[in-house]
Amino acid sequence: MSTENRVIHGNGFPRVLAFRRPADPMRIYDVTVPLSSEVPAFPGDPPFALQRVSRIEDGSPYTLSRLAMGSHSGTHVDAPCHFIGGGATVDQLPLEILMGKARVVELSVSEGIGRGDLEALDLSDDLRLLIKTRMSGQLRQPTFQEDYIYLTPDAAEYLAQIGIKLVGIDYLSIEKFGSQDYASHRALLGAGVVIVEGLDLSEVEAGEYDMACLPLRIAGGDGAPARVVLRTRS
Picture 1 (cartoon, one colour):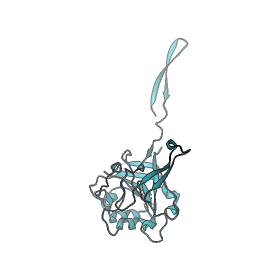
Picture 2: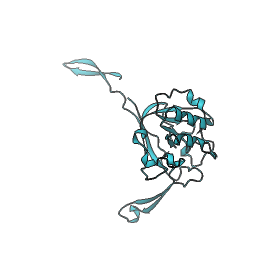
Picture 3: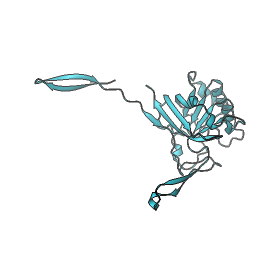
Picture 4: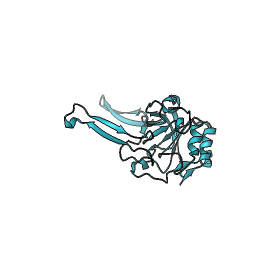
């Protein structure tokens, strides 16, 4: 807490009083990419579209819209059943994994994040890991970027082995573009690790935060768009 002086006038004599200002309040970061037609979709996925079906401006008593999108649009969660037969669906994901302390790390890699990049970090006390790369903020660009940063299969296996329960990254996939075996997804989802993709960590510094990651509760869903919020820890 910082100290500030204030002059108080009383009985004809000024007095200087010292008082403490309260510490800065906890800051909240919305690390969700706003859904719009400008947000790129992974090639082959349905794009996001919003269509007005009634408007107040047109004389209707209300405004109503029709939404069309894929289950992995914008900032979203991958449930195990996305790649694992019989795996948990998005509505079955435990809230205690989707909420709680999360660690943000920033990695300066040009292509894939390897096991060695993660071993250099002390992740022994972490359950939720959010990875910030040069891709943070790039989902504001409407053109899909094939050279995004991805998680190599050995890195994915390492995270599952050390007990990480949720991993997030700042573009539309943790898998290398063009992969045919989806080994990174299978290593994580096969171990029950929740994947969060499409984060915007551009305004967030490395460190520990309280996280709330709430995907739409779609019955039987293989994934769902999510609102993800970080709050600084006291």
